[in-house]
Image 1 (cartoon, rainbow, N blue to C red):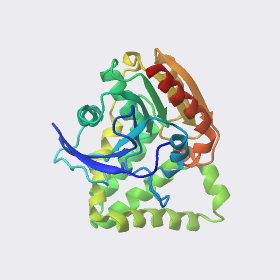
Image 2 (image 1 turned 90 degrees about the horizontal axis):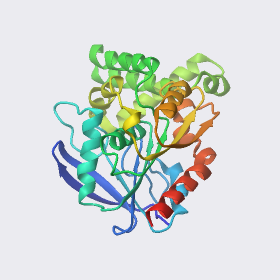
Image 3 (image 1 turned 120 degrees about the horizontal axis):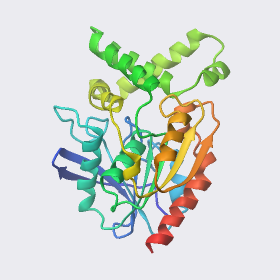
Length: 302
């Protein structure tokens, strides 16, 4: 059982200093877990306020594993913010370098959103180093629709005379892109209420992180507009989890990924009003499938 208590550490990589978190016994086989661009490696906390707290029940059922997670360069945690944004490939390589001293037994990678993209990149670049990958709400390239939404986020950051207003509006637009029209119809009686909710989300991000969160839109959001991963190079067993009405990783794009992967071993597509945020909101719907996949990885590495 992996307890929701992390021990943090720092590692020097060729791209800067990265902050990591370890859950469990350092001698146990490792599973890397990475979330979205705003994620911290502090996935779980005893007070249940971790970034991806809803995922912890999956790992509380697993024995004899450790979980390792990292803050992103240019993200909201304790890793460096390079002067020049890293590419998706460089982010993946930085994690690989940091893992070298932390484990000699990488069992699996579980990634949601940006973390899933990085897992695909890692598996494509180093096909012999990863045997099991779960990509949740992620694809091998950006959808045109999601890239357009990110372009507008970046334009708000660049063109707002008030930096804080730019951050608030960019985050509000990002939140809109993560959810669905269905949710907004069910949740709000009027567009004014929905708009206030989105602005609140932007203000919340700014209040919790200060102007430092601007780097989300200068260092992380832009690199998701032009990445391209060759799925045919991925030799790991890959489990795909995706969501209807996901504007970021639409099912049509995940189907293309599924058809190109040499060793695709299962797919779960979930109907949810939360769209892309289903990877956080709908863990219960894919928990059983993910647990089965990770248990399989344990048996194969034993």
